[in-house]
Length: 183
Image (cartoon, rainbow, N blue to C red; front, top):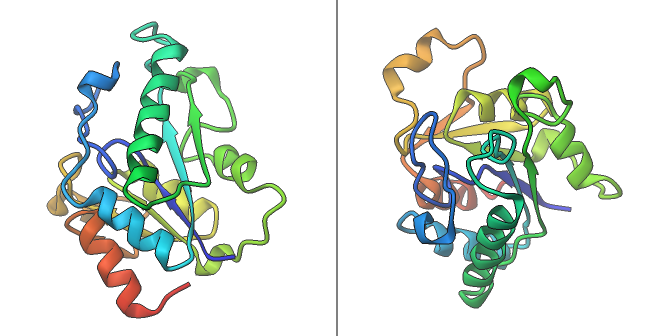
């Protein structure tokens, strides 16, 4: 099975910035080209898994119902454009709760892919932060860091775990990936 993992905020939609959260569907804005990139991955036979930390639920900034509504509407928009997401998995926990699902731990990936035959060495995790690079590496995936606002290229040299590839946004990453004939 050809699979790919995507973070949500900063990959599919505009990231509100460190310490802030998308708290309602009205705040959710797709990044330019992200829906089309997901459609291209779908058409190329990829199973797409969205893996995202969403501690705003545990912080009481928005209820689980708001997160569920955002997810339903996001998936509806993606599907109406010809894309398909296999599953969306969130970690709602605070870092200090010590769960096994909060990125860079791999619990969300393990849960989402249980029962699927995935060669993680041939699978990419695409995200916009060092946590995404960390979880991808911890799961045995190749990693693509997107420069969509959360991180900048200058700071990466100091990271203990560096991304395998760096791209401007999801559209550029998917175009590059499909040209490689990867997966």
